[in-house]
Length: 106
Image (cartoon, rainbow, N blue to C red; front, side, top):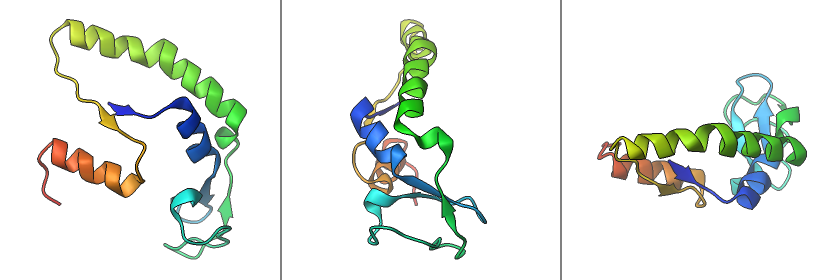
């Protein structure tokens, strides 16, 4: 289970750009250019999804809290071991921590 504060999630996802060509998702906070115009993967143009507006993200987070979090409580009650990982670092670091947690060699 990845843990990230609602404020951090809103900040990160509202600054996300998607490539029109290859659909690569770019989190601009972790990219060297302040306002990238083209995708570093394929050179396509970026756009912002309507789902990445802060007011929409707030609704999605509320839905998560109402519909998904209860599932984790049930799983814990049934004896499943759930792991929580801090999702606040840069995505490549979070991914590295996921690999370490599950002992996957990259």
